[in-house]
View 1 (cartoon, rainbow, N blue to C red):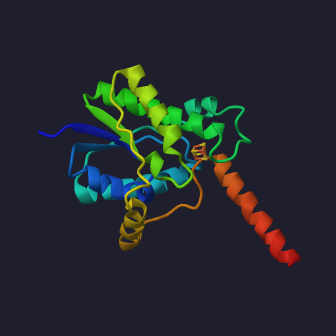
View 2 (tube, rainbow, N blue to C red):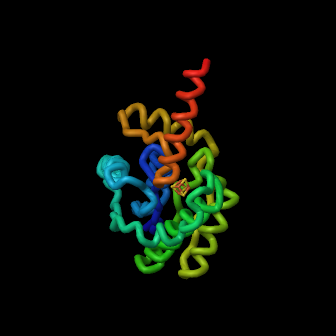
View 3 (cartoon, rainbow, N blue to C red):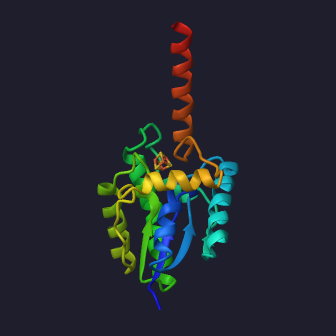
Length: 193
Ligand code: SF4
C-alpha cells in the first residue's frame, strides 16, 4: 500500500501536471482550501475545475469551507503589498498551516502544496513555511519546486486539451485590484500614444 499524501491545490491550471505525477506514486488525496480567492464566484469557478480533475482521475477531494475571516485577519495591514511581498507569505502560512493540521489529523504520512508552481511563487519562501507548519502539527512536508522539470509546459498542454478555465490574477481581492490598476495604466498609455 502506497503512502498517504495530502496535496493542497491552489487551482487546476497550476496543479494538473503535479496531480498527474503524484497520483502514480502515492495514495493521493486533494485538499481545496483557498480562503484567499475573491470574489466567491471566482472561488467556485476555480474549485469546479479542481473537482473536474479529481473526477477524471478518481481522486478523493477534501472540500474545505469558504470562510475568509482567518485570511482577512492574517493579511490585515498588508493590503498594499505587491504580489510576492509579505501579504503572500501570510497567505501561504494560512493555507499551509491548515493543510498540515488536516494531514496530521487525517493520518496522511506527508503533505505538499502546488503553490510553488506559480511563476511568482518562490520555493525558497514557500517550502520553509511548509516545513514550519509540519513541525507545528507533527506532520511531514514534501518540499518541491513544482515549476521545474518541464511541468509548466506539460500543464499548459493538459489545460489546453481540456479547455480548462484559466484565471488572470492570483486570487485575492488585492491581486484583482492590482490587475485592474495595470489594465487602467495600459489603457491610459494607449490613449496617450
Ligand atoms: S497575491 Fe496571491 S499569494 Fe499573494 S496574498 Fe494574494 S492570493 Fe495570496
